Image (cartoon, rainbow, N blue to C red):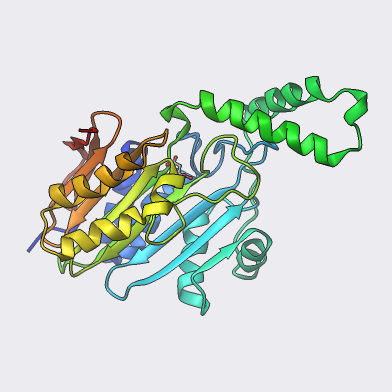
Length: 314
Ligand code: ASP
């Protein structure tokens, strides 16, 4: 029997104890994962999650999040949420209070309001500064000839988007992943992000797409991804990794297979993940660098860093 624990990405480490506290008080593994992710969403530390999360090309922070319950395979997800900070909790409400699994944009806002969530200004000095830089960059090209011609303005935005994307390093990604397992082997995965910096408005990444950036099943394990969501959406990386566990592979073999599939796409951008198997083994991986993840169980006072693997192209 494993001790109940949480693992998370680096940005989750300072908030794992918030989830562990919930477990100590008898809360469920879903409550614990939600609490840890909420801690990150409501702080400005990350720069890519919740308040202060990187803005889109119009200077607006749009949040994506999902939660999955490995006991029932129920899930909830939201995307393009710009008026509320508690994306993971709204996602959980989608799972528990609606017959749906995924709400986006205005529909997600309407639902959040109905559920009594508090509106939140997600901008900070940093996001406003980024928005100003973008606006100036576009304005410089908008000569009088273009004014009022939305089509051309959109073309300029689109070209700028490509230019910025080329310059984007992995530092522009920073989703938070938290996976929990209780002593009975119940797994929950929570993922929350503002997505790729300077994304096109309405762009949705892998974080809220169940199967791509989030998946778990108590019988096999759980996986959460960070990195260029356009890659894992194409391959359903989280789901496939759990499938490889189901087929009997070790955690390391399953992740290695999935990440080799990412590398075989031969597209720019990298993928990272954290994962657990049904026995409570944990691992993280990256296609781009050394990887670590953070572990904390109910008997620990502090989270501890654990090594992961670097899956490189052959
Ligand atoms: N995976 C996220 C996305 O594509 C970005 C990230 O991990 O930072 O939206």
